[in-house]
Amino acid sequence: MKVHRLVLDPNSNSPIVILQDEATGVLLPIWIGIFEAHSIAMKMEGIEAPRPLTHDLFSNTIETLNGVVERVEVVDLVDNTYFARIHLLLKDELYLLDSRPSDAIALALRLTSPIFVANHVLEHSKIDPEDFKISGEEEGEEGAESASGESSGEGDEDEYMRILKNFNPNPDKDKYN
Image (cartoon, rainbow, N blue to C red; front, side, top):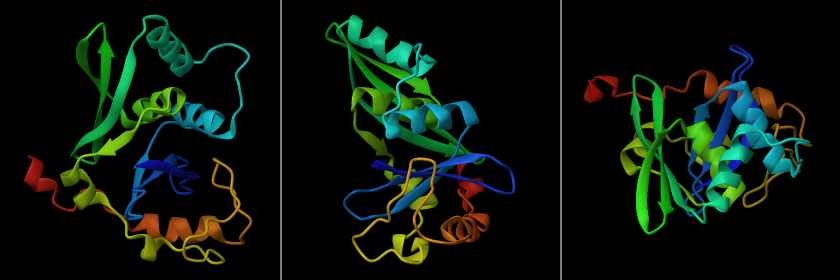
């Protein structure tokens, strides 16, 4: 998966990180906190903070200890809340760290670690890229856009929000209870 873009939900003013499967194009929107969105956007835009942010501090610590984040993975969805796990290799020992997806993604971007989503999560929460086409985007082409979701096309945010407004990330909610 890769981070496709960040958008803002106009109804809740909550940021949404949209992951995209590089092989199939399938999209996965995850509502996240403003601070995590800021951290993700800064890394995507190549902006360095004058002092380390929390995700910078954690990635610097891992690198200083000669650790490696082998991968981060969105592993579950329970009651509309996503759960992630960071796979940290430190001194030949693998640690599985519970995490919010937004923190795991922010860390993965800093350490260039791969991002995965468990199949059962993706199957219940994915959006087909054909249903998510933005006016002015052609197949195989992404409009010029920033991490904050700004794009060269008019009405892009309205189109994303129309699709996301009716999105239910967990249609089989009772399955997990």
